[in-house]
Length: 313
Image (cartoon, rainbow, N blue to C red; front, side, top):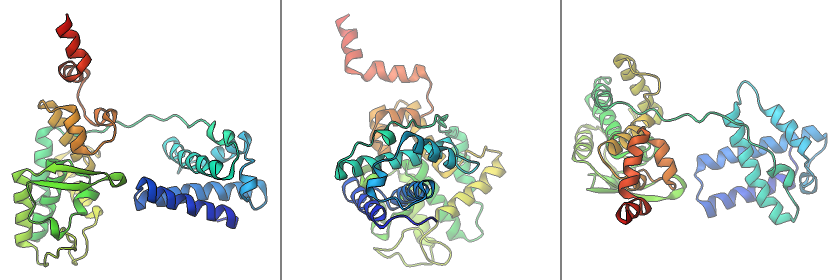
């Protein structure tokens, strides 16, 4: 990669440290930010034909931004990825401009490319149950089958992200009636544990050949290390093909299914928001595959103004 000036690199490191310390960004998020902004800095160095110090970065023009956008967009970088990269660059520039005292209008005014947001595709209730049952049949070793069954049960029964399920440790076993889960951005939430999920984990623990260590991973791979998300993705791929389910039937789809089925059964949207750990109610609404009529029912039944309006009338 084209060399980036020491001053620009130091600024990037300082910004990343701030993102991690003050905003609780995960290691994966920090690495994505680092890659995106470093790519931008390297492009500007090559585009301008000289090392870009902080003063030069403050003079980036609208034309420079258009050139970067055009060069970055390609077969491997669609509109969604480009929008993410631009968001990281803008965040970096807001911080840099405040620290260095310049106006970052050319960067901040750059419009993000439009893209079609992909709506989550939850499984039907019977398909979700079939998926969990079929996952158990994929492994030859009984303890591996029990392990896979326990993980997918946590995804569907508790609405966990796969990273959250695999971050559980021996200290979490046996599962209590409620779990404290640390999600994105370090945000903590409390999730009730269904008896079926507790039983699935107990059966796995009774069969696993590895000792359960308090600070070690709860779910282990066949060699004893921490279980990889890819192992669960792969076993669900196998089950999906056997059941004739679409490619969207992924581990994350089970989390979508948890939210959708809960809401369809009369669950409160706010409560589901808390269970999922979403900061915004609109995120939860988009996450659930309910129709507009169902959302209006929830709105009419729970919104203060809506209920107040009916009483007043």
